[in-house]
Image 1 (cartoon, rainbow, N blue to C red):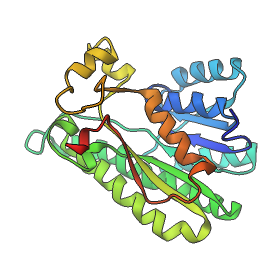
Image 2: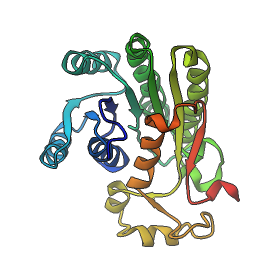
Image 3: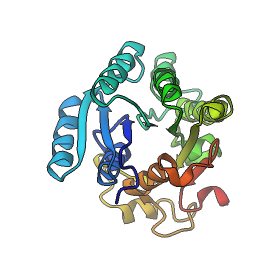
Length: 256
């Protein structure tokens, strides 16, 4: 408890899955959590649970592909809490179409959220971190940014967008280290989330059966809190001398 006490954290895509797990965990560790998502009704319901459990959190609607939406969220965050210490760029989408199957509309939709959304978040938040004299940015990439094959689940735009996040993270780490702003990326492998469950896979173990020949560590698929724990480490002062790293949370998949 208390690993983020006194820190203000913006988390995107926090209505469900890895973002929600991050919001719950950060609140338990003492952060003031600004949970954001386009699905505002679901987000507000989850934030109510966080507050009822003793955490401090607010829900704000955010379209990560919109600079105006980002500026509004940042402005409201600073007005309420006075600063921003942490940004977790977690929001993302996937369209299962390869290079030949995808249309321009598919490509641009995925890139606008997964890639441009991360850049816009960094652009909006970094000036406030510079004023603070410190900050930690955690960007959600994917093992699809590192390896190919089914790691991107047939999503060409997804793979490209996550590759852009990987590169942008290293760019930010180099250029803003002088401001004591750390920028790191987390690279999930197979993770059992609500989205996966809606697709018909009923459990983490069942999902792992599909990946047992790829991720050697049982149960061969992770859960949202595995990713949230990685967010927590990179957001906290425990990683104060770490920047520009890519942290795979994949059960050893990329070690093959």
